Amino acid sequence: MKKEEILEYLKSDKANSLFKKADKIRKLYCGDKVFIRGIVEFSNHCCRSCLYCGLRQENKKILRYRMTSGEIIRLARQIIEQGVKTIVLQSGDDFGFSQKTLSDIILNIKRANPEVAITLCLGERPFDDYRAFRDAGADRYLLKHETANPRLYERLHPGQSLKKRIETLEYLKKLGYQIGAGNIVGLPGQTLEDLAEDILFMKELDVDMAGIGPFIPQKATPLSNQPPGKLDLTLKVLALTRIITKNTHLPSTTALATSDPQNGQVLGLKAGCNVLMPDFTPESYRKNYTIYDNKVRVSLDRARELIFKAGRLVSPSRGDSLKCKRRPKDYAYT
Image 1 (tube, rainbow, N blue to C red):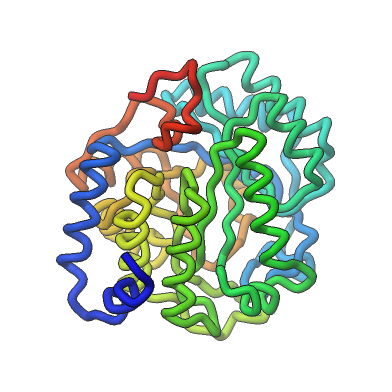
Image 2: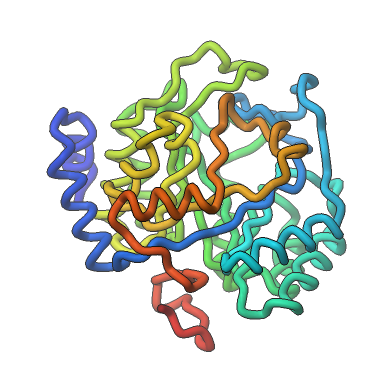
């Protein structure tokens, strides 16, 4: 599918046929099972100044926290005991956690549970850190590109560049990580052409996972008065990403649930998604992980309920990449 055809779909008011096509592609390339990833938001400290994010360092209105290594490891084990086989360790760009501390956390989780996958979502760090985390046992790295428009990227991310982010994603791939990118739909200043480029970028990079969700404003950011991204447009981007990338893992994100608490994630599952990511962060911490406002908490029970509501099945596996060339040789995909 070329850029012009993608734009036609994005502009069209008739999305049902697109969603049906995406669902058919999803079934053909990914099957009917939905993979579950357990999120641990272990720190809300961040050294960045992204204009849309409530964790930005200039925000003095939230209570900052860091979970201890012991808390993180114990929580990971509790998640695993509930049958979840992927742990997502997520934080802001927080250098209060050293390379050694994070490596020790990864190593402790993997030693006790070698069959479990660990996904990291820690932002941009020194390249040596990525290698150390991989050596400690990390399997995947999620680093959303947010927008493939370099000018818009730099406007929204002061002091950062899209070029550096792409170089980082390519380096992560070379280290053997299963990589995830992804964009935000409805960013102020974004065009439909930008969204088409986002989809083509994820196809070109051949990402293992793509996290796509609508822009939701946060009251303590410079974009607090901007309108949120549209749910229907986000679903179109998800559907087109499924059709074009075929077997990339696509989570039906928490941002979809925040946009429409009753049906947002079910609509995502019916538009090509095959992953849900329930949040296991303790409430005392979670309430201060304010990336955007009114963030809905999706529990494990709620995730299972949504999967059944969509007429799908819960996968018992850890759900490695469906990209054969990067699938671990010693892991049989089910």
